[in-house]
Length: 251
Length: 156
Image (cartoon, rainbow over all chains, first blue to last red; front, side, top):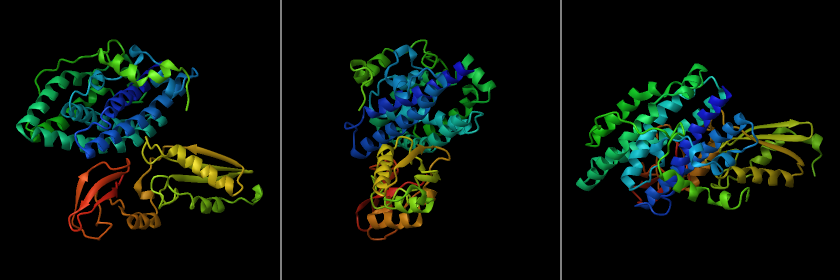
């Protein structure tokens, strides 16, 4: 159970860390000042959540590693984030579409985790949920505004959705870790959230003049660590360079 | 210097009232509701703080400011712990804090999800510019009467 719990916590922390880092890449280069601030604030929330998840993961592992060690001194294949979160931002539309697809999962997920049999998990979920609700409000509003905007913005959002949709299924692909975690009452099986997620995105896409893509093919391998995309290594090379060059460096 | 045995929880609370929030210095860390507990254990003052948002970069500074302020008052033994549950809520902002925020130009949080009025000219004719502002806890609004932009402290 300790192994499953550690794995589960890494998945939560790595999702927040990888998406948080991707969002932070917009800092200083977003299309408008307000957007720049919003994206950086979202990144900040996610990196804060990372500290909580990976901090607990480090305690559970009990191997002398800290949250920082887990974030900055692990290899690509030790990361347990969803593939969708590591692919490059591409443009503003794809960035916000990804955020929306993730937020629409994260809100019901964190809501359920508040009832976890593990009190620490429940506490971290309750704290993170307040932020996730804010993120969902904004990402949903922006997806609708861009989808139902100009011909150009609609086309970009359609491209973003077509590109990202094959990554959505990984969120709901249960494995042995999920089974063990569900049996212990720590979290529900991710597959049980599929309908809630579908309802949220379907309603938004209707308002955004976008069509829910057909098919349920899913790229997998991120949350199990089996196979990441080629992009994560490049991202970590940037994110981890200080600890790679100067192991153990502190402020 | 204050003798350790003379320390009381009420005294510590009073001193913390003088520790400003590093990002909104017009209110204290007590007004903001980030100080969750004060206890005296022998000659040690134990203080519990909570972050407003999980990524709040001010937490380390808040702990340092508390330490500095209490050291000046002669508190030698201090333990500061952080806890995240129950999660911080804007309900914990004091009435004094709310009034000061408005005086400072930041509209205080409301359950309705938006500011009651412009903190500058008091007009109720206001519109949202962005859900995020200069810090995670604020959103950007604008007054349609005096045309001034202003921060709104988000209700969470």
